[in-house]
Image (tube, rainbow, N blue to C red; front, side, top):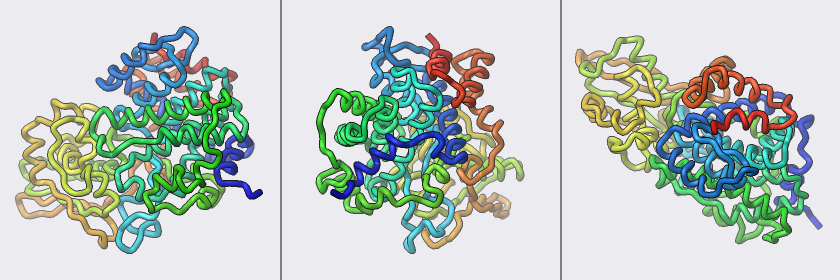
Length: 473
């Protein structure tokens, strides 16, 4: 009997060992691990973070898995994953996997400007909470945690490749729909499930796959990431009991890929189509150094540099204009049709004209940029009215123009963001981001020690040592 795609994927998860993982993949996974941990910690002080943490306290357990951050406690593994996953994505500051290049049309785009790459989403926010919950439960070592993290990441990316972009463009939040399967894979590996039981975990998680882009700009967006983490953990624990489910959920004509790809996928055979080097995590996973949507990062960085270089003042600007390609336009206008001045801070994280206006005025983008108070500023709202996007699928490379009252036109091309996967950013940038986030909820010395443990993950005999330091109870 021929092996199904579901079976092949489950055997990949079961058999993956650290020695099989290229060094660069290990490094990229470690960076994602550290970055997501930082986002969990700072997410715990957000309004949405406090609310979901309060919910998780309804099932406190002295011997459960840990909720991290400002108000730490122990609860069931699945509830811990739910809370930590929501915290991780609360600020939209977490890493993003995408092989779609927003700023230019190249080999990853079709003739009409539609992307041919994949947008898997914020895998760290689904994977790390699952790895921590299941790993703490089993007493996993750092090596085992890293193996599970890579396994989950690769599973999500392989499914994303087979799913195609239409899944996302038509309204699904792929962070959750793909992340729940990745979380199931990581949890299954840490629980020691067989290949057959891992197939079951995939099917159980598939039945819970959900998340809608309509919730972007609200607390429900990070909740969808948390639910992806929770679903994956729950699926693996349930599969371990002998629970049954579809044996080939990825290949069945009424299964995960066939239903959720909305007619735009490549089919289950594409799951095992591997990129050069054999691992998706060799490329595509970008970190953020601005707390907003990935599609805004490079544009806002360009505006900050332009404003600093030319000492720009809002009162001297007649218009801000950015030429954009369809991939960015669909994300940064929230609905791909229009954009309005945000009424809530969370909404601003996805609306490019708002971000451009804020970047010009303040010459920086910070956590305070996306507060409810900030979006009510009169000078910001006035400049927003003079900020426009021009959709041009044939422009080749996106550009930013600032038209001045004196007739001058200042311009710059939009390149890759500082945290883009292809950028060789210094290691201290990640450390600085981690410490900036962690010191919001713990003393600096404790934050530095926690960074050291996460940075040397492979040396830990038990990930519980790191988790205990990150749980502020």
